[in-house]
Length: 65
Picture 1 (cartoon, rainbow, N blue to C red):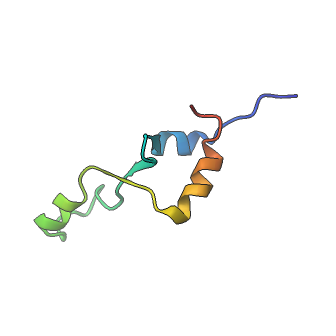
Picture 2 (cartoon, rainbow, N blue to C red):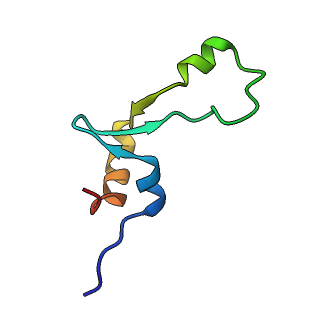
């Protein structure tokens, strides 16, 4: 039987932690002049993924320890 492969795009975007899976917030790449300073500051850092998406992302990363 061939080796199972993880989703390479998901492995680049999500990291496993003790509390769950973390990801970077969206909307901080370009066209930032229209955004307020407060909004850009709130987009910093990482957050845990929602419970709705956890099952899908876990399936994509099932072999990624």
